[in-house]
Image 1 (cartoon, rainbow, N blue to C red):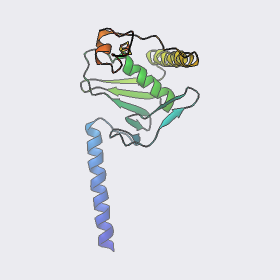
Image 2: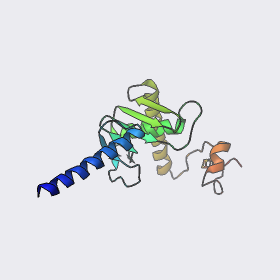
Image 3: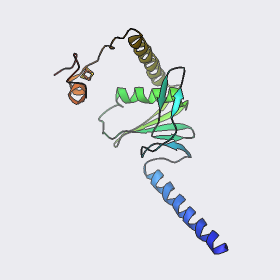
Image 4: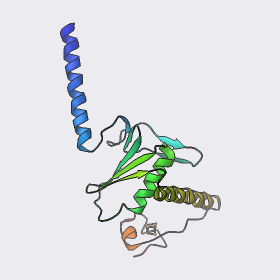
Length: 161
Ligand code: SF4
């Protein structure tokens, strides 16, 4: 019986050490509350007042972490910052990391840039609600780069071709 318990303890300890090493490799150092890195996360976070829900890549005790596969040259991409702002509004953490393969950014909820991004998210939600109410499509913001890879480019009247 004691041998069995020792074997179970050793397997558990080895598994825990491997998990901790793997997480450190991708920059996760504190306690993980939830994760959806493998697409199998079960917790959906919701803000019913805003009508928003999300499944962040990683939710640690004090922050969310979002990973992007594309590399960037300068600042974090605007759309990604909005995404992080929306996550902050939904999950309620005070800090968020946005990680690209070559760069990493940390945002605090009380930072003016993040405050503006959260305001933009609220404004976008307001516009979407209005558009739904009046059954109108919201105005597009086409750019050659976005339209080239957009899955609606064949149907979209505003696409730049
Ligand atoms: S094709 Fe239309 S929906 Fe897609 S990015 Fe361009 S403007 Fe936006």
